[in-house]
Length: 176
Figure 1: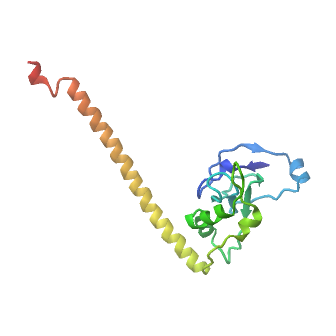
Figure 2: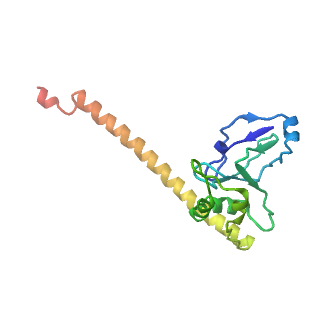
Figure 3: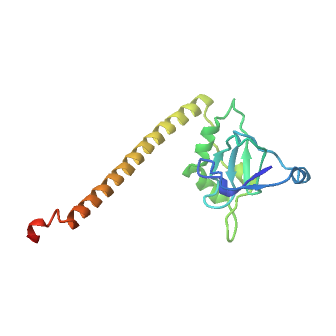
């Protein structure tokens, strides 16, 4: 069974960085709970605390490390994307950090994680919020792409200017 670790949880997305496994025997001995595609994973430690992602279908049995909480929302009441965005919000993280404890590394208990307030609009409103967030994030991605293309263009122009300068294109008259 694949062991999902903290390094796999990005801010809003699954990073798929780890590659640890346990045997079925260990799974049964530890009375582990299997996680399934669509579950929301929430980090209980490591910066930032309470970052979350939705587990994709990795085509294998999955469990989580001890410092990861998981949530399997009732889809009639909660949109998993709404919850994922909410868990990754400054609003939620600030609340989580207030309840976290630790001297060297902050950690939030599952009990305290369960105490955090979750705004609970009707499912139709959650879906509307998700659509709006995704439209706005899409615009940000478009702008990032345009910026990258502009950077590439500037680098090419810079290289062309330097090439022309030192091949004599700029100072030919002076050299005569």
